[in-house]
Image: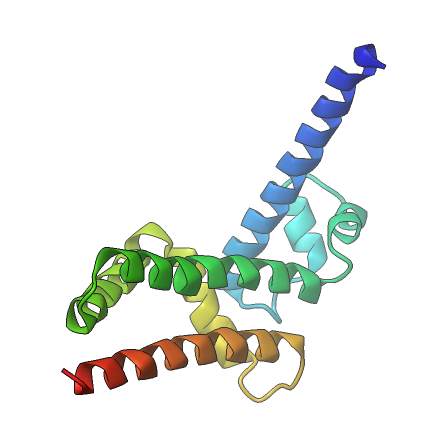
Length: 155
């Protein structure tokens, strides 16, 4: 069994590399062309994989988008709130830190921010899992801001 472990790790590494390449390609194509104008063949071809490989990792184009949006939520919402809340005790300072964090995302995570904006616009009037996910993390930010404003009004 020990002799097969390196082969298993190599296969896992290849799968992880393929998964990351597909996600990166999809992110770039969704941002440059839009979600609806991008198809799975384009995503697969851009990383020298087959459309079947995309279906292996993601059951649909929407599932791939949802995976990307979940990562965007982590970067744009979760990390922002966690970072800001751990740095500053005063509400005003947290608000300023949050705005700085978000402004910096335009430099450090340009495509993730653009994806959120573009997909929010593309799915604005469309019910479904994508709209629900965007609404969920938008609401999370709204609640955070409301709590911050309440805290500031008590000062």
